[in-house]
Length: 115
Length: 116
Image 1 (cartoon, chains in turn green, cyan):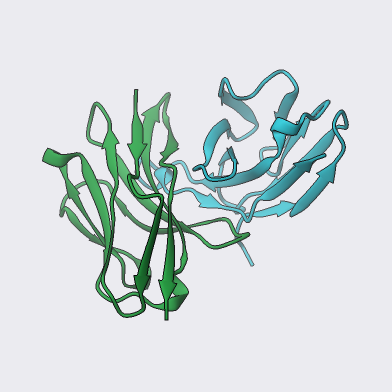
Image 2 (cartoon, chains in turn blue, yellow):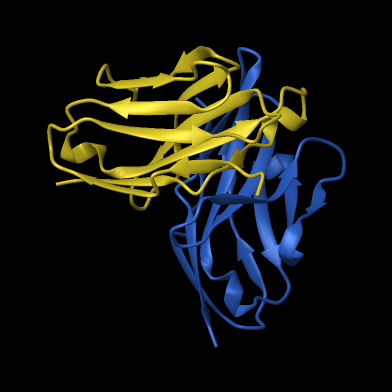
């Protein structure tokens, strides 16, 4: 069965430090991969997505992610974190089933940023 | 604002009562999804509509849950005889039907349900 694992439940970084959030997936074919961010009380905002091609994808707010097929990973990175990046981050895989795409999410990583 | 909207944003109800939530998708999107998110977890798929047709229901959607999208525009999610375990954030998302762009789902702000 398809699944997404985010090994880190909670991460704390200092403002200005670099960030890497881990995501591992289990999927039988080439996946569609996503990172979403959720601020408190808000819905989900898409940061970036990978369908095919270049394995390093750029997203909004200075985020990037790298697809590594050999490691079944899609880790999210940012070179310098801002206090406003404090939020919960979800990795998701799209399963193409019956002509549409159902998102399967990881449990999320909550990011705290120290000033 | 042309994003996905949901109403109400918060709902507190007593166990056993019925509740109904509404979702208005982005106007040109023909696909609509409902997800449920419990505390400390990622969203879980509940059901999916293409236009007015409900094409898939998760096993999470018990017979107390019913969703409709009568004219292929807005959708409602009703929960009958609510239980404390129904307390969660209910998220709606919409997308287009293009093979690739359909995988990009746009989410609403959610309806937070608390069953007391």
